[in-house]
Amino acid sequence: MTQIIDRNKFGPWAIVTGASSGIGKEFARQLASNGLNVILVARRVSLLEELGSELAKEFKIQYRTIEADLSGERAIKKITEATDDLEVGILISNAGTGNVRKFFSAELSEHDYILQLNAISHLRLTHYFGKKMANRKKGAILLTGAMGATDGVPYMANEAGTKGYIQSLGKSLHSELKEFGLHVTVLVTTPTETPVFYKLGFTKKNTPVQPISIEQCVTEALWALSKNKITVLPGLKFRIMNALTPGSLARVMSGKMMKKNNGIT
Image (tube, rainbow, N blue to C red; front, top):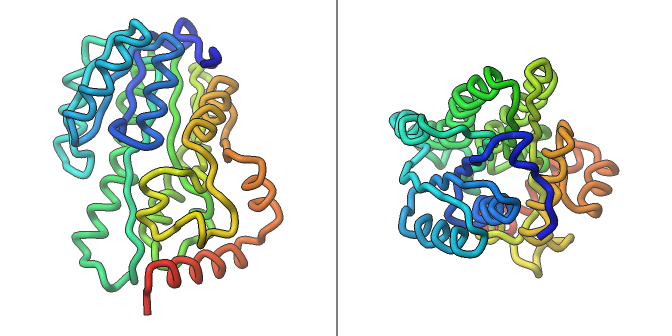
């Protein structure tokens, strides 16, 4: 793989949440290929151990796994305690989930779960690791948002709200933390061929624009982080679509697709 991230510029360890599959797993792979040691965080520790062992063997790096459910209050403490002895130079805050449904069909506790996992956990990780990076005057933080979130996504209202929060937080910190020499980039995730893409009711037949590969998404994101771009929206076709489609129209279109693809009546 092409060298994108300089471990000497940011620090020898990178932490990746949601690392057991999809985009998180690919972030871990590409960071390891660039010579960074990786801290892998997710609920399924067996998958993390399998991935870590594979990366250590292939790229001669070190790894550490942390079994943590970021929807829980104790997860952040578990992560911070397990990494206290390491110099973490890169935070890839990627954990999250989503469900397509009518707003009132979910209990308030289910909305709280999404809020904790998709927003509050990112805030807490960014505050903890970002403060340490600021003290060292080096480091990089990447937060994962989602295309369309700031305009709203019908039948995923709470999820869109959490991703919109992440994008505003990241953009604000991009400017604020420059004085400490930190890079902060928001990955505005476009349709990407991950398990989540299919979970949301999409297939290659019912989507008007085909998803990009996980590899392309992560490569473009890491390039943007290395250059300290404020946001990155992977895939030229999606950048064009995003630029040409007014938010009001995008909201109507996404609502119709979500409703149709998931059999919502």
